[in-house]
Image 1 (tube, rainbow, N blue to C red):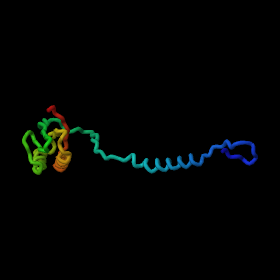
Image 2: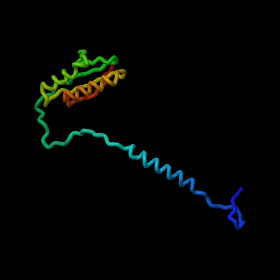
Image 3: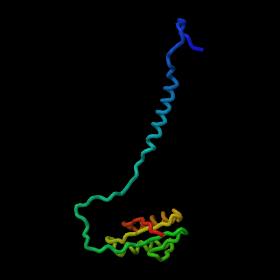
Image 4: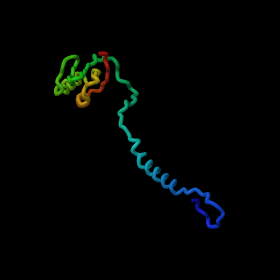
Length: 139
């Protein structure tokens, strides 16, 4: 049944926009609340440019190979090393020559626990290792 305007001239042809405005206001509030959570800053330490590059007269030491296998055993240069002694080994390596550190090449098996890798990275940071890279060797 159509609504009449009182004059009896026929059905009312106006659109009721109140529900449309209600929906648009709800969507606007939802977007305003969720928009700040979509962007958050990530702190990254980028290398800074220097006018005087360091001298390159020193030969870099050979890289250190650190491998984590599927069972969580850590190998330091192909020698099994207990995880609780790894930070001491890293600290000794850094203290040999802090200005010319070897590169630490980490090879992690895809089946290894993430906790072991996280502990290795924490140990490397605590030992102040500066050159850390991830490698994947064919197995």
